[in-house]
Image 1 (tube, one colour):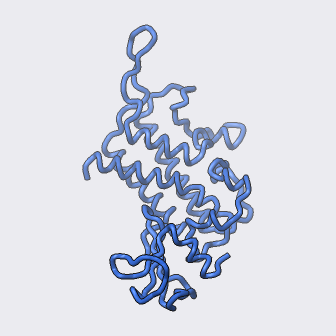
Image 2 (cartoon, rainbow, N blue to C red):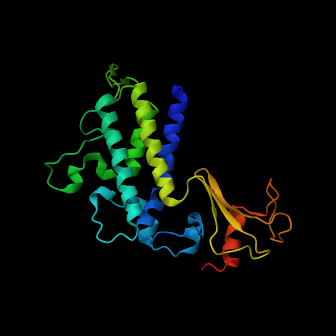
Length: 255
């Protein structure tokens, strides 16, 4: 694999983790979800309070107490993903960081002797979003050029370019973390029969199609003979695309 492809795949995985992190935090506080309805429709079907709307900004999982999570599998996944990304940031910082203390671009390590958990966590206290953005900066070789000073001289760059072996380690770690997050949320590439809910128009089997880079869709097994008010896909099946899914949810009687 060439360097540019590894950079692209690493950045894409980190951004997926950031974009879906709020969903994982909500999943921890929600009983394990059924196949139906699709998780991506949950926000339109559930009244959210102000606390849930800013769920991405809560303290890192590693700094919280979890007396009674409703979804232990989601909590385990979240803790593992945080540790993987945080440990990756530690590894990259040890290799390429030249930023002095006090510079906001610096990744600070854990300080076990600090007086409280948040200060002891170093940069981990800023959460997974921050860690993903910081790692992405290293993968993209940001801030690796000498910086001009007021006296006209050039200062050493804050970071060294990322060596190829660490880029590939970042790619491996990010993709493992991304895969676990998507599997936990049921957003990985999969095809799943919709349980106990036949097509309301013909009685055929409904199938939910999901993927990490696509909106969910539902198809009916009957084919063109199904009278469902939606178009046909390339295989001749009635297909409810993202724009029609809320209608199908309503027709199937899901509150």
